[in-house]
Image (cartoon, rainbow, N blue to C red):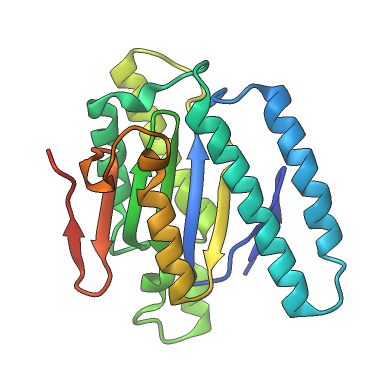
Length: 227
């Protein structure tokens, strides 16, 4: 089963892993800016793949991908040009519905943050491995992350375009993803996701942002934002 693929950036997607994903609106960042950022990190990540020591190599790739995300996030939070469709509560509700459509089947939804021009998503795909008896069942039924995102982005773009009375590409084809290795990393990623609007100066507390959603993994109960 394919667990690695490359578009502008390399994607490592182990079977049944927990993932932190970021995807953004089409043309939300000027092409010249995103090309410069991608080139800066793609070259360094490619070089890191040649490090002989596996732990050192994996740590270097992880750190580079994290730095890329932080820089990209900073651009998305500050940019005033480009589309900001996701400010609309009705569009937030469309995205919420489509993300939750696959919750419990393709993944367990842990958290999301819907900003004006991008989305952060934390999901655990291990739910797909439950009740599988043979490897052949896994090969036939397992939906990897790239296919999961294709479903989410495909349905949301269709319904949002209808709502906005527009047509054409809605999301950038490239998404950014990191697989989560341990509980400490998971907690850090959840905090990063939910505090995105706080960092951007939109609210003082993450609970006050209507685009946030979080399920407490210790209780399984959703933490709802204030109306």
